[in-house]
Each structure stands twice: as structure tokens, then as C-alpha cells.
Image (cartoon, rainbow, N blue to C red; front, side, top):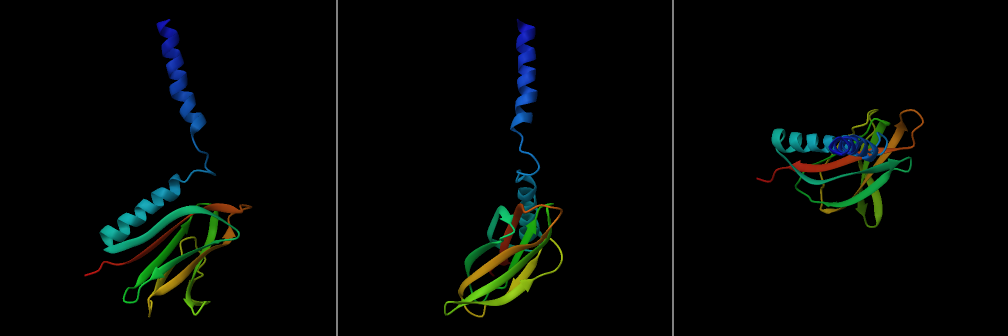
Length: 153
């Protein structure tokens, strides 16, 4: 009886974690680890204050995120895609009298774009993140977005 209990416990300890493990296509672990590295780099090494961060799924349609940015700060907006993204781009627009006016863009051929935004006035901005190209035949992936500025004095 004791041997059967030990065998059952071993089977449970080995097989259940394997069956519950997320596969490489659905797990957010890599993006979350990348976010953690950005936090350490920005806050500890570059003395920046993170004002927004998130991770999500991105498809061929891209994503938009709006946020108020304040005059007097210089913001960095950086994104990064997972292994399925070959080229990720960011475009930042400012709401001027109900019209979205482009103010910055990063269209380098990489999956970690960064733009610097220096608002001349406080207002609402749209940050558009788009996948210019995926690796292979993928049509979706995970991505992260971080918005930061220098630490106030």
C-alpha cells in the first residue's frame, strides 16, 4: 500500500505540472521576464521613472493606447515583441482639436522600437504599436510596452 501511494504521488508530481504547463505559443513568461529586465535597467541604471507598462497580445491589426503626457517631461516609449515578431513599430500621435497629428515614429527594422516624446503642451497622446512583419506564418504574438521619463528632481 505504501509503495502504491509513493508511486501515485510521483505520477501526480510529474504529470500534473507537465499537463498544466503553458505551451510556447500561449505563455507570457518571456514577455514578463523582458518587462522585469526593462524595469531594472530603466530604474536602477538609467534613473528613469516608469509611468506605464503592460503586456498583451498583438495581431496584424496592431494596438493603440492613449495616455496623457505632460509638458516639461521627456518621455521614452519602448515596445518589444516576442520571438514571433520580426519588426515592431511605434507611432505617437497628439490629439490637437480632435485630430490625431503624428509627432514621432520608430520604423527601424527590429522588434524593440523606442521613440522619445517631448510634449510642448500637456495633452492626450495615442501610442500605436504595429507589427510590420511576423517571423514565418505567424499572425499574432505577445508584446510589451513601457512608458518612462526622467526622475523628477
